[in-house]
Image 1 (tube, rainbow, N blue to C red):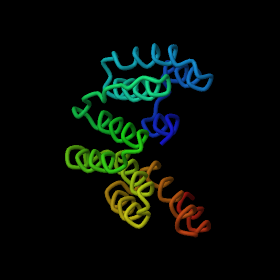
Image 2: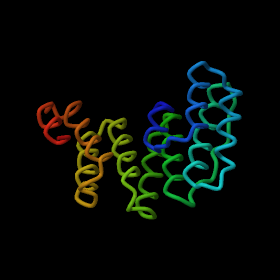
Image 3: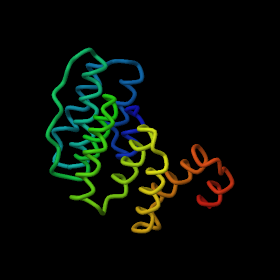
Length: 168
């Protein structure tokens, strides 16, 4: 999972995140780590999770071996843990975090999307579709889930027209 995709899933318009993304794009790891550190020190749980995720990825990209932070106190924190595990290629661990997160924070559509993404990466697109369909039963108006299911139909279901119809 690419950092930009993960940050998109976490969603933010925070200018510090945008600056950090620019620093990552030019591979200025130190500047990116400074930006993500300021987010990690925020009082906002979402910003803390984004900061921890970004710091982790920037540290790996700069050749460090970071410790995975403890973030199980919020849905955003779990989302960061899922994305970090996927970034590391430990998809089973990512799936484990997703299952834990859904037990604790079932009402978070982004966790369902992250779980489905990990299931696809594990070569289990059928499970991913079940995850998305079940989540859409709970959150029928979630744009994030609708887009994720549309992407699945287009990329794995061979149904580009159905994907277009779902998004309409």
